[in-house]
Image 1: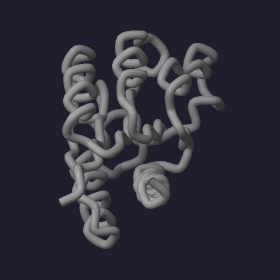
Image 2: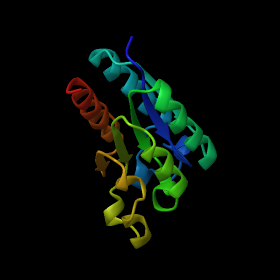
Image 3: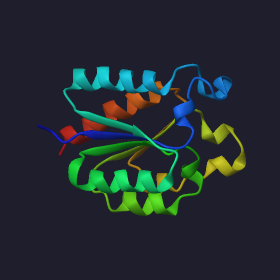
Image 4: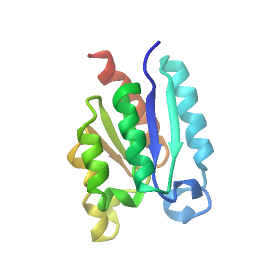
Length: 147
């Protein structure tokens, strides 16, 4: 069996559909996970989807993925702009990493324009709503097929 694709979500993404729906939409994190599970089944890829508001927990999951995961799809939320710890953990991961943002971070406040995660990511998808996760999953499938 193939190692799973880790789909990791950072702070406040548990509030999808409730928090600022004019920016993030009305779909919930459960909707995101279900859409990813449906596509992963079609692509015949296992996934492991998790969310945490805690930086250290995200670092732990990234480190876990070093041994148990094939790729990481990460929406780091606000940690994109602040977390060297997440960047360092990603730098120790050898598989593909795709960074996802539901909103277009480049059309928002200036502090959101920089992402530490982007320094490691093999691709960045921003501004495509929750469809960005599906685009990321398709890209990961493509990258893994080339290995």
